[in-house]
Image 1 (tube, rainbow, N blue to C red):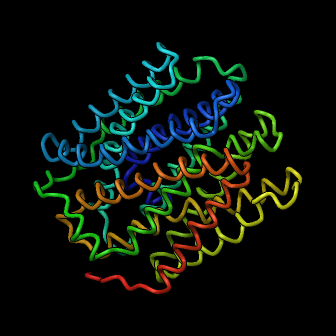
Image 2 (cartoon, rainbow, N blue to C red):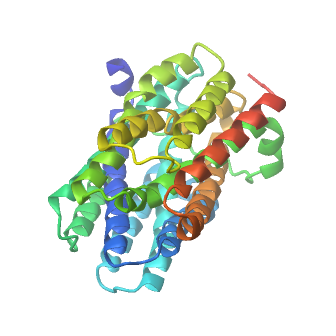
Image 3 (cartoon, rainbow, N blue to C red):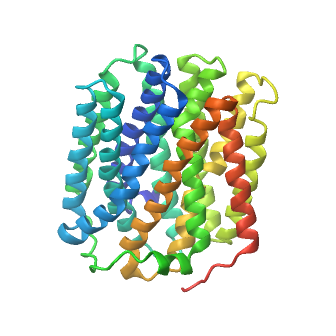
Amino acid sequence: MISTITTFPALYLTTLLILVSTGLFNTYMGLRLSADSVSEVWIGTLMAAYYLGLVCGARLGHRLIVRVGHIRAFAAAAVLAICMVLAQMLIDSLWFWLALRVIAGVSLVTQYIVIESWLNEQTDNLRRGRVFSVYLVMSGTGTALGQLAITMYPTLDVRPLIFVAICQALSLFPILLSVRSHPKAPVPAPIDFKYFGRLIPQALLTAFLAGNICGAFYGLAAVYAVKQGLTTTQVALYTATTVIAGLVSQWPMGWLADRSSRKTLVQINALGIATLTALMWGWSAWPYWFMLLMAAGFGVFQFTLYGLASGLANESIDSDRRVGLTAIFLMTYGVGACLGPIFAGALMRFAGAGMLYVFSTTCALILFLFLRTSRQAVKH
């Protein structure tokens, strides 16, 4: 694992800093809006607005990278993300925040396209699972650290937002100062939805449903935990436990993915998610330690889905389509992550907090059944 980390240290450090800011921001928003008695529908909509920006921004980010290159595109996106966080401190309006979250999604998806296409372009298929697993470990570590950082700010004032902006600013340094060879300029090419849809349908559906599950979790898990009567510290530990379990399992899952069928692993993950989330519907008032245990198991299966889907997609794609594939993949994930908080938030609003995990169970079962009955073209 150490040798893999030293292959792309700048990209991994940048990923860590970006996700610290995102993890802290999402947890802060959930707690802040719940404290202000904002409805779950609004909370889910604000989270969905970020993913809407992610979907819309994938095409813009792709074009920007083609035009000015990876490094300049990343720098411009990071500056825009910082401005959106700082602007949120100036005006306290849900409608204004909604617009800011869309713009922030546009900027962040450009950063993700730069990092993921860079990693995939300079990695062969025999190491792709392990390289991408370290990327996801850094993502999970950053998210968990960001979620735990909220415990330093029990009053939920503007200080967490300042911390978010600082982390975004620091994420520029590893990329700008990297001595590793930069990716070659991508060839201008349209994002062909039909081409990718025919070639990698299983990978795209996995990304879409993983987006639904993860978007609902990030937007509403803190709300679910508050509804269970947990304190602010317990909420932070509950959400962080899920993320930490996911990041710890990334390397073993990546190792397995390089040596076995990624499709089979996706099916196992789907069954694991369906089983664990069924216990969290609200059948019983579980003790806190058991809630943490279920959250950890859920994190293992939930947060390794995206890496498996990415590996499944990239093993069938030519190198000159990497940037386009990354854009399509993030758009697909973003559509799911945009819809997930809206549907789950509406269900929670009208049928109780446990509907968050009813929604996750449904997504997992759909994924399992689709992979059981479909075939994906393989082009090595």
